Amino acid sequence: MARLLSLNVGLPRDVAWQGRTVHTGIWKTPVTGPRRVRRLNIDGDGQGDTAGHGGEHRAVFVYQDESYRYWQGHLGRSNLVHGQFGENFTVEGLADTEVCIGDRYRIGSALFEVTQPRVTCYRLGIRMDEPDMPALLVKHGRPGFYFRVIEEGDVEVGDEITQVGSGPESMSVFEINALLYLPPHPRGRLERALKIPALSRGWRRSFEALLEQQSKDNTAGNAGLGPAASPPPAWRGFRPFRISHKIAESSNVTSLILEPADGQPVATALPGQFVVVRLGSSAITRSYSLSSHTESAAYRISVKREAHGAASGYIADKLQTGDVVQLGAPRGSFTLRPDTRTVVLLSAGIGVTPVLAMLHTLAAQGTSREVWWLHGTRNGREHPFAAEARALLAGLAHHHSHVCFSAPDPADRRGVDFDSAGHVDQRLLQTLDVPSDGDFYLCGPADFMSDLAAGLAALGVAPDRIHTELFGGKPSLTPGIAAGSKIPAHRPAGASGPGPMVSFARSGLRVCWGPSYASLLELAEACDVPVRWSCRTGVCHNCESGLVAGEVSYGPDPLDPPADGNILICCSRPQGDIVIDL
Image (cartoon, rainbow, N blue to C red; front, side):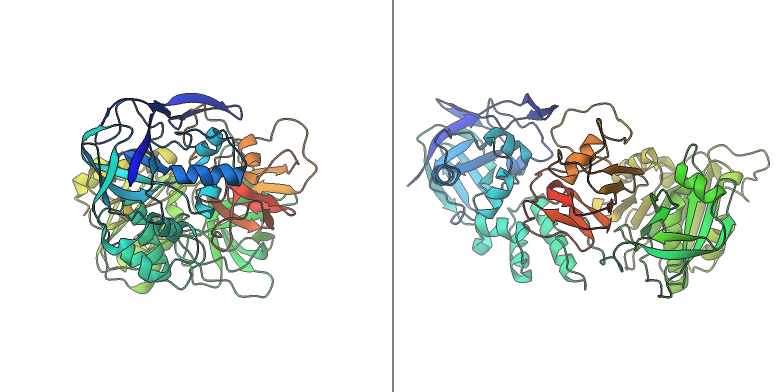
């Protein structure tokens, strides 16, 4: 007979960890007497990070006493106490191998439904004083699971747990957990899992992404966890390319036409992808989107001159026709989706470059899709590709165009050089009656991206129809870490390390590896390079990043390898000079 052995609650608290403050609700303490279980949690309980825990489908976390005994033996510890895994219910019975997603249980006067396995994160490692604990739970198949509250009620230690319903497809918590985190990911099982109504939205999206990935030729990596799948890079490291033409596109944008100098053909890039460029004897590395048709015999990059920009200044002032630069292979998942839906291309400033490549592709295909072109810039002097975009649009059967100038010059002509004064924003989309059922591609400054993405969501555009690309470092994901002031990327404090050179391409930073860092993630954090992570043990793939050049070793090994050309920075170390797309 299954029964409730311990009822554990706790409100979020701040704890010190590695010089930072972590806000977490993982500290749970057993309580006596009845407690009311409500739709989102238990009276006296709370979640510190509601993005990763909590909500309707993760209201109550369940862990088994038998797993406690297992970990006591495996870890050689006798000091584990109920609530230590952050669970609300410590139970006798209900093994992960036996409980199925969609099963329903009556405990006390409340009714519950199983929705998903636990998604482990680094905070369990803090609570257990075992940093590898997130990976261990998955490797050993003991994640525990979440309940959704179907009927609110009171529960108490000693209550019998009675199963009152069985989930369709009879897929256990153990099986669902392995299906996401461990290879292989059989298509038939993914399809079965998606037939379970009780499966939480996050896990459903992950399984849908894995199915979509399997429908493509490239199946490397785990699209259910990591970045959207894209073909592996056409080559590793850098290849020499010669500048065949250098073009001043506007007062502050310079284009380079680049042809391979090694006699080998260029690789076809997907419209919207970027390349990492290495410049000069000081090996400056930067990421630049390809800005033209991607099936030609050369690549075009277009670079805006930035104040105090070492790379953009070097390109504008130093590089000449005939010079050779080094290019990494095209990469990135911000690419034009093949479909019949309306395409809406939204850009601001130099963010025009990847969507311009998409427009080139649509024109080359002679697409019959409806295409919207909306672009914002300051004035005509800072409006590169104006004539080029007009010519491409003129060749499309169904197109709409609107250009905004935020600070038009007196010589700029409304109705000729631009269509309205202001910015590309939600109000403009409503005024133009842009259809909400298309695919939206956004690129530009960070504020433009965040404001417009929020505006599209408010207009009812589905999240999976909003595709974004952000120049520079991507926004950090550091769950539970108290927010601090944003600091530009910098060299780490103290003496330079004795190890190989690590280049962070997006951040424009080159630093030497040192033995004091356990992983590339720790080095990036020491430099305030924007990073994304959750588990820190090679499970969640949030830290998956592009490896442009070089090799790494792992410790611990990832449970599921990243996509070709990518690495998990949370558990990798350089094996020589490397360039990372961060």
